[in-house]
Image (cartoon, rainbow, N blue to C red):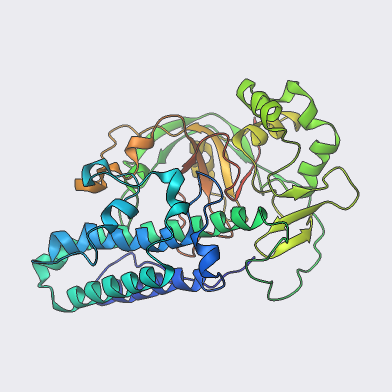
Length: 403
């Protein structure tokens, strides 16, 4: 499922490289939105998703609020009302429009949001061209964070669009595939042994990292095995056909409650899983299920149930990072680790302190990256996180076993 590549945000950020990355990242968001009509971009399909128009405006508000207002004397927001509409969750920055009601924001129009982006982009470029070295040094951390923040929203834009289009009975494609996918034979699952050892986990400096990736610290790992690839659709289909969704022995208590309450019987976008011709709704439309590709759009509960059925378990995030699988597949991989702060965790300074730490409760860590993750936006220490019931993300699993 290839998409147009965004620029890699530079690890070293001299002014010209940061300006080039800014242009590329900002343009890529517009490229992702281009196949969508203004009607597509305004709709919110569920409270956990956001309209495309909101993503485009929110990432713009971030640069305006975190960079331009603190660093450009006399800067006046393009529209002072936008702070209420496009603040996501920053309590320190004032009240905001309720998240579940973002789809009701038919105004400003899509055209006005595009003008807003252009105005802020121009202001940032003028700042980069004219700021003295001391002012640039002050702004550089927020600019770099803003680029990585926008890359996160580029992935969210695609996941939210997929959920939106899946609600349409016409099964519309976000973008038709460039070519018909080649048939692939599933490869046997292999295992890699990892001996007991003390490992250094977390970002140790040198290049950008989110605050939740540090500080680096030591953990003791017991001997384990890690699968050499994520679980495939064909393997997960065998779990379904063996009655996996009907047998409570494989499920965590909350997971079985979710299955019973919501009627889950397959990953989120699968259809006709109980027939000889199962299909999956994708960003390229409805397609026959590819048995060789990694299973996607499963919750932590489904991942853990499959692992139990397969006589294995999910890895901890520390086991995953210490192994650092070279090929992360097309999915974020659930771990069995709660999203907790590392020892000595320090949040970002200023308003960005609310970026990650406030969510460190009731979430589970995923590692790796997905087909929707912008190139250059993954690293072994990256800690993605979602509630255990979340299924609309490109989330799958890799098995682990005790040695």
